[in-house]
Length: 88
Image 1 (cartoon, rainbow, N blue to C red):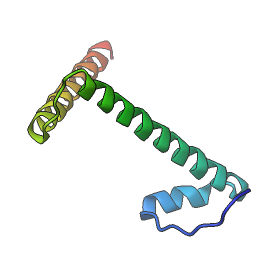
Image 2 (tube, rainbow, N blue to C red):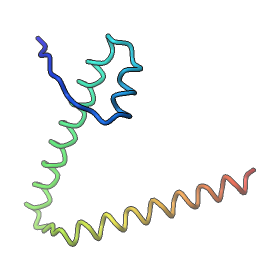
Image 3 (cartoon, helix red, strand yellow):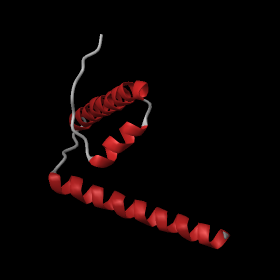
Image 4 (cartoon, helix red, strand yellow):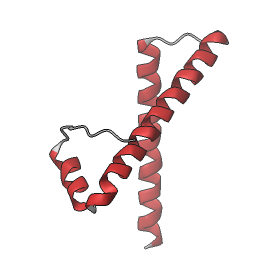
């Protein structure tokens, strides 16, 4: 069973979807939505498990960790770029 729905997308996503074969669009969007729903379910379960183990999440702590992860990723990307330049 399927249900027809209408959604609005940003131009870049709409353009990408329109480039796909018409028969593949629905299955692509369905798979993306299922993946997102599974991710959110796993994230909620992880959060619950950590809370039950005594971890407390604050907005400040989450922001601090996101910033640390962003900085770490930037450093990894810079090191990788340096390696690529050195190898060339």
